[in-house]
Length: 415
Ligand code: HEC
Ligand code: HEC
Ligand code: HEC
Ligand code: HEC
Image (spheres, rainbow, N blue to C red):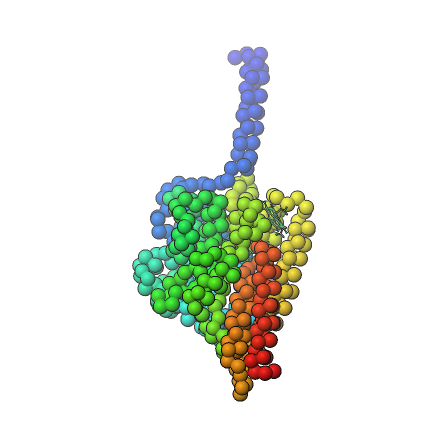
């Protein structure tokens, strides 16, 4: 080859190489595909150790590990002193903390106040990937085992196996109580859409539930619907109470973290959003894109969680969230104090020498209702953000029932 031929060759090849390189750079950094990386082998169908999934999904494993930074768990009692009073006689009155990262569930459950261990093995149901295995091993006996009988066998916190099929990585449900509740609603659980599953994987745990009397099996009280009034109707019809308040004498039921129920029919749910849209937004790590596996306050990640739809800027959004939550907290405090007043009046009436029994019982019924609507809001994480209007409506209802209870309790003893 002479120098002319080399020049010509370079003239042809250099542009081709440059274009090819640019295309390659564009292709590998384009970021519009979600990284799945795998499976490059097989994960055992019952692989409960999330660390064992790391080899196949390293980027997701790193994201999951970031939950370790989410350590804070302040006590609810610091900001809501009336809770000690309204929960008297129930385990929650001994200890009730805000939640923290999914990776801490084992540490937290093993450190819980002994007063809260009475429910037994069932407590672990929302805390570990090993629970479906325990249910398979012990059958319905699982629910009847004591806390201490099961605790040494459970070491893995919430993890990959709780939400994913290891063979396909598709989302799936692993908790029988949710599957049964959906079947009672007439849903075909084999035909759930991916968007439904992006909320329902969370609804395995972020819901209210109860222990069936006798079997202690976990069940969801959803047969009449998932809203506070429909759930209370369900309990009333079954004549179901979980404990008796020692001062008021009232039989009460306990709602628990009803995030899914509250979210249903909210503005965002009606607009087609799922839990994962705000709590697991698409996030870039280097040039890779993935669904964030850090389950936390979306306010820590507002650019990914909210500004994809809302263009008014992060400051506006934070302000809106804080305003909603501030109003809910203020109204919740009013309801809390009103329920405490009802409890105090009931206590006085029960101790009075002359009391109109029928009126006293009516006052207790009003207390049961007030406590339910108040507590439904208290235990639901997010301070009302998931459904502001419905939350305030529940609190208004609680205040009304509490005032009725106070009035009737006074009338019952002629005060
Ligand atoms: C609480 C439920 C939950 C847990 C636990 C969980 N994931 Fe996911 N994962 C999801 C959801 C929801 C998506 C989004 C799926 C979709 O939109 O189709 C997802 C998506 C994925 C994807 C698909 C790519 C992407 O980023 O969207 C991979 C891979 C994945 N997860 C791996 C893991 C691994 C590995 C673990 C354990 C370290 C894990 N996940 C734990 C709920 C979970
Ligand atoms: C297997 C049960 C389970 C599943 C499934 C589950 N969670 Fe959780 N989640 C928990 C528990 C339990 C806690 C509290 C952990 C603690 O404080 O030790 C929690 C805590 C949280 C927190 C609070 C973290 C904080 O900073 O306070 C968020 C947010 C959250 N989960 C969102 C979700 C979302 C979104 C999904 C579905 C994609 C989901 N969770 C699926 C059980 C579950
Ligand atoms: C439109 C966005 C959005 C959707 C959808 C959403 N959330 Fe939230 N969530 C929030 C915001 C905002 C907060 C309040 C965070 C704060 O106070 O810092 C929150 C708070 C929470 C918390 C408490 C976290 C903490 O740090 O205290 C949990 C748990 C939670 N959500 C679970 C869920 C579940 C389960 C679903 C689906 C049923 C869901 N969320 C749907 C935006 C959303
Ligand atoms: C997928 C799109 C989408 C995402 C993501 C989203 N929103 Fe929205 N949001 C909507 C739509 C749609 C509405 C209802 C119409 C409207 O008001 O613009 C709405 C309404 C609202 C409202 C007013 C209604 C109400 O319930 O008070 C607030 C506040 C809000 N969003 C905050 C947030 C915050 C905070 C986040 C992130 C944690 C978020 N949104 C994430 C779509 C979204």
